[in-house]
Length: 109
Image (cartoon, rainbow, N blue to C red):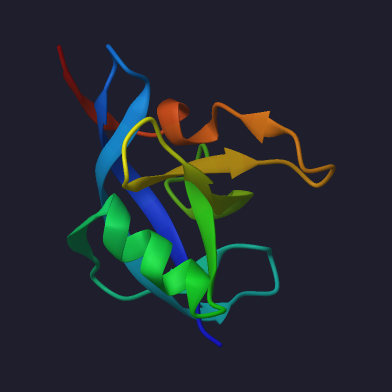
């Protein structure tokens, strides 16, 4: 099992779904709670869903006031309105959150 983090998202605001993300493999967890990350790459929401289905952990990464990446909510797979799946962030209690829409993103109409 590997851990990954999402630092940016491309979203369709009309339907409220994430289309693509910048995904990083988490290389290390530092004593201050920040993460060491690889350079990251742009992947589709389907690729993220595949990682989760394979047992990997994916988290949303927020940037703190010192420019460091901090983990926030986890990401899970949800069924969409069509045959594909989509991803959503959720908190420790399992409730959906807006964390994926609070990180830097490119909006599509």
